Image (tube, rainbow, N blue to C red; front, side, top):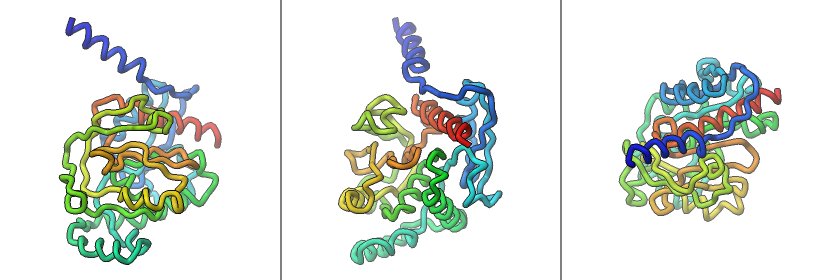
Length: 276
């Protein structure tokens, strides 16, 4: 009986939860990474592509200096990585919050890689949103990627979730993630309301600040998945762009979210390629 149930669950995971991909003909899709995508991301997308008789090639946008004209790309991925310098968001907030962020500056891990990535990715995102020709260009932002996407919209981060909201920093562990709205993009992609996602971060979108100002400043953005009783934003989406942004790492997750999210990338890359 146990063997049968294991087989049934495996079968369901490859059928009921298989994300529909609209790629029709074999082609090579070009995926731009704002910093070199690691092996887990590349393998996850290549695995999905092979199932649909597609090929993908990855381009390091930093090395190729692709920060403005994205016509050669079928998708953009902003991978995880190091802390973001608070200077990119603290000057846009109220004085009391700015002073609070300054007091916690010692908790920021300043790195050479962050100094390289911060201005480049902010430039990429500024150009991505300012050009209407990118309205069909899919973007997957993971962990730091979701954070820099957040910052590019003027939304501040928690500098350290342990210090600020009393949640232990999420270091190589899994959190139960909830998706309250099945009609959200992440709800449609994953097709379930909760799962366990791999986490490795100590910063994140400043949820109360976002909620307080959302209607006025960011009506086009929604938090669509959370963990830790709603205190950590796990996914955001935009009304006007094909974007999946996750605080968790789908490329490391062993659940179905890995194949479904990267299938979404493949599907929208095909649509983008076709529309060129």
